[in-house]
Image 1: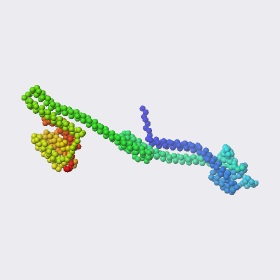
Image 2 (image 1 turned 90 degrees about the vertical axis):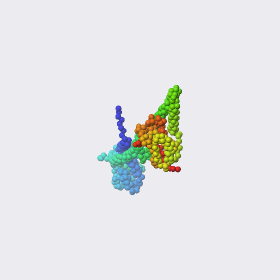
Image 3 (image 1 turned 45 degrees about the vertical axis):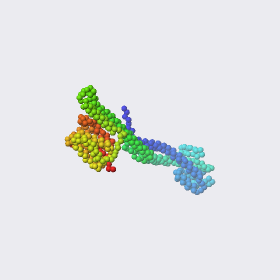
Image 4 (image 1 turned 30 degrees about the vertical axis):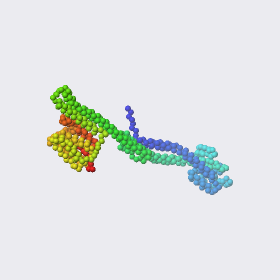
Length: 493
């Protein structure tokens, strides 16, 4: 299996490419300048010599200032000039200072002699002028000579030292090379810096996109100096925010869906349990009624016909009570049920509920004590809240024991009033406390069956308090049990 080589970072590769390109350009530039600089200098010198010859042909040699003009040309162009008039007679050289010979003059002060050199090459141009490469006989010095004829019978030869020309060319080559190296170093530095200013933001953006791939939307791209990259970073930030919001919404929808599925499962489970409990609760009285009815039909226990009828009526009454409680329980669980809230005095409300249970209280031999501030007012559906309180009071009367005392109190807070119903008696086992709010759950099944209670009272309390948006609960005390529920607090109207 081949191991894939890890590529170097983009910044390093870019810097390497930039330096390599400049080095290649510097190499070829150096090769070109060292190879062709001599030819370039020769060509430039030839053009300069042609221009100088044209300038000399325009001089008026009858004026006294022609020598100064020629001297200036020699100095500026670094050349040696010979002028012939006629062609065979040397009229002027760079070394002369006086007029020696004129065409119509018979005498001469001193005869000038031209340079005698070996001609190495000769190139004649279309206009009759020529270039020659000459060499001195006793030295290795070489000269480039340009000759041209003008006027009726005049000639000019301009000399330029090839050694000086090549030395200048070499100096220029090295100067150009050094300049190119320095300039290349500066340009490389600028290119690397600029490349870094482009690459660094790209690396940051790359890391940001990796974070997005990993579903991490916390990192953001900072502002960048380059407009296009800044816009790219801003777009990625916007994309990250949009993806984050979409992910949050998707997760919320998933959680809601999971909750709905779980709630549906619980409802199905509750419904199956509810139906099983209903079937069980109805089965017992139906079986009893059926048994006693068959006994009456077949004459079994004829002397107890009245007793059989009483039992059948009692069981029928229990069945009717169970059906009514079931209807009540199912009614409070519907979504369309509306709570009719009003303002009421809590002390008066509790007093009326207790008065309706006076007969039952006397039967159980319980002593009921109510301690509620008469200035407290609540806000809620009094019909539903009376059902809550009556269930608590009925539950307390069913389980009262020991001192047979029931204490009804109210604790006030800023937003609600907590009504507590305490009865002396046995505590609720810890395993039953969490289940007593479920429908058909009875901690004392035998006792509850004898009293005609089916385990729906506390489950109805839970539904009614949920409809009001208030809390409820139970607390085991030292010598009894305390049930409580909250009523929304309000001011008197």
